[in-house]
Length: 249
Image (tube, rainbow, N blue to C red):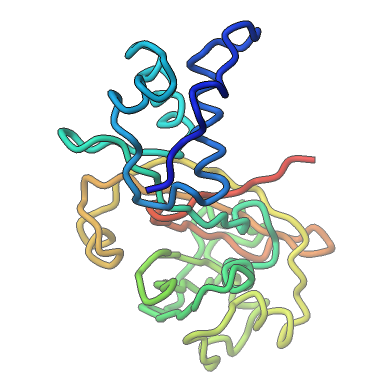
């Protein structure tokens, strides 16, 4: 195991408190790869001896790293470096989840679970700006990332705008890419609502989770370059093993 910096690296005359300096020193070890994912950190006693600080200082520094998601603790075993979680940007993107995920180098596959037509109720008609009772397409897909189920999405589209969509093979295909190429629809913007929820028993089984496991739910209404809504979806995302990036400019 690589050793942290020497005790002299902590400046007792600096404005920054000792716990913050120790946290920064360990963070540097992690960022530079000298402490690797799932590798054990030195014990509290080792850190006390190496840096000449109190147990309170060590525990405050470790707590800071836990809050930052850089380390995790295992009871009776100590502290370990957290695995790096890939940043996924599609929550704040209009490329579509397939394109955004593929850009990270992940292997993406999609299974179509259900495809049917239905009549729009009042709420859905208002969201898609169509008449109540107008036919809509309901599409349920399960997306896999590196062979693991990761995204379950229920999409609703106005059938009049997308005739013959039922004939399309959307298995392992990007829906947005298909809409661009075959219907000339270019997503321009969306409203999205994000919340933490517990999946139903059925949804948990599809995502290979327990019903008590929290997941990320995203509801979205997307519109085209003319500002006309064309898609309404409800997606359930596994959040373990990834973190989501949303840039605000």
